[in-house]
Image (tube, rainbow, N blue to C red; front, side, top):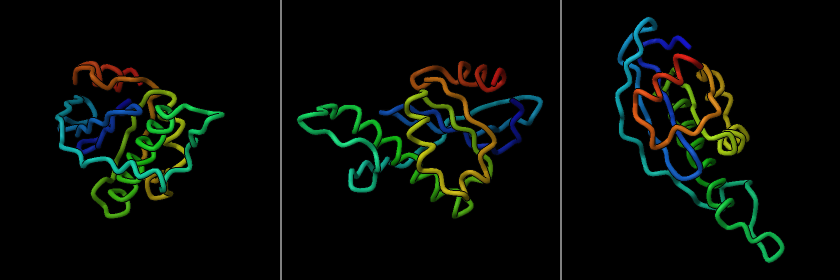
Length: 133
């Protein structure tokens, strides 16, 4: 995948978010880490699964809420113009949950998605996945 200079890359799973920016050009990908805001995981704002005695999967509900929180933040950044090009690299389960919450402004700046868990991997691993992507 060839990414223009300035593209934001969000690497996420149900517990972590890492943001990167391409400082290179389309011919030479060069990622740098950028700080990310704390993710709001307020359960009242997610349509994810609810845990109960019949479904005691509290961990999955928390991961779904985290994924929804990531997208709320990305939606806001797309709406405000802070992100104009975006690629999301996320664990397949997290990516599925994230897609449920995309605003049309986010979809408009989304250049691509990669369903792969690369949180905790090196920047070079992320770059390789994007080039192969």
